[in-house]
Amino acid sequence: MTLVLISPSYGSTETRRHWADTVDRPVAFTEPRYDELVTRDQRARLEALHPEGHARFWGATPAHDKKFADVGTGDVVLFTGQNQVRAIGEVGAIFRNGAFADRLWPPQPGGPSWHTVYSLLDVFPANFTYTELNSSIGYSPAFNFPGQLVLRGEKARSVLEDFMITPGTEWESAMAPLSRDRVAEERAAIRVAAAEELRTLRTGYRRTGRMIVVDRREAGLVREYREFLRGSGRSAHRFFCPSGVSDLYVHGADGAEVIEAKSTAEHAHVRQALGQLLDYAPYSPQPAHRLAGLFPRAPLPQDINLLHRYGVDCIHREGPAQFRRLPAPEPRRALMSSVWSDSEA
Picture 1 (cartoon, rainbow, N blue to C red):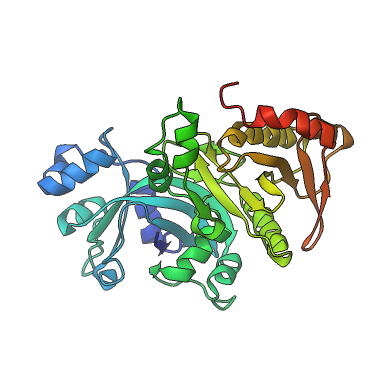
Picture 2: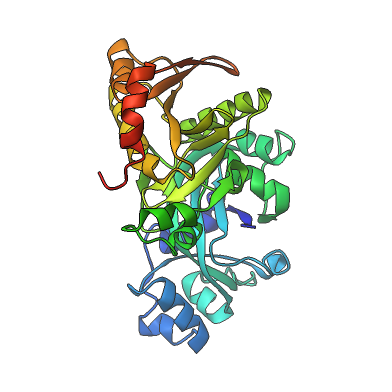
């Protein structure tokens, strides 16, 4: 289970300075002034995860040693301050080295060393509030995260689900067995995971070499639609494939459906949803019976027609926990379904 770290990083002058020095800009850890302070094992771990020779770093003081005992590569860190989660990162190499930490972040006179050091495989800006985070964890709305926390179990699962955060280490692990030119093997190897087990944070759809990032509005729309499905006795899953990670995958008595959510119903987002659905469809764990775009409001008629032309349904939000499906004409869906599942096309 991926752990979730909550790390204050914007609230004090000292932490803002640390952020500027080692997160806003990467540190060339191969330089002699840093290299001379790390052990052989620590250097090997850094070089394996950051072969370019530089990385962004954060850390924790001895007061948090017990909390950090089981933190490892691929865990997620939420950087907080000023009543917001300001950034989200993925933990890379993590080790304890007071001398190296003090070179990165000279301690205040008489102050503690940030001796637990971890590199960041990825870090993305974020903009959700403490109120939203507290709601996800089940804390009081007024809780202000005064110190480092490490969330485990259901609390971690809830955060990763609600804000759709997928560490790149998980995505890479899921993709490792796949051979793109052997579609049957790919479909058998794709791991289907419950939606609450996936961690993704995206804007539209962009990905670095590691972490996938989803717009918070899309995450909220997916969360609401998932609850809508549960109300009718259906469950939603997701799947990994070489093209990325699906937003929702629903499999029931009437077949399999792949759903892509978008934060707006603008023409560009409708086109993007269509493209992603056609990209994901061949990798559906069961041949897709339906494809659907999910939007916060009804797209324009011409954009609904665009989806329908390719046999794709349109689902849009009509109000709190209320969604309406505008199905594609059945003859068009039947015509296109062979195209959806044809990975050789």
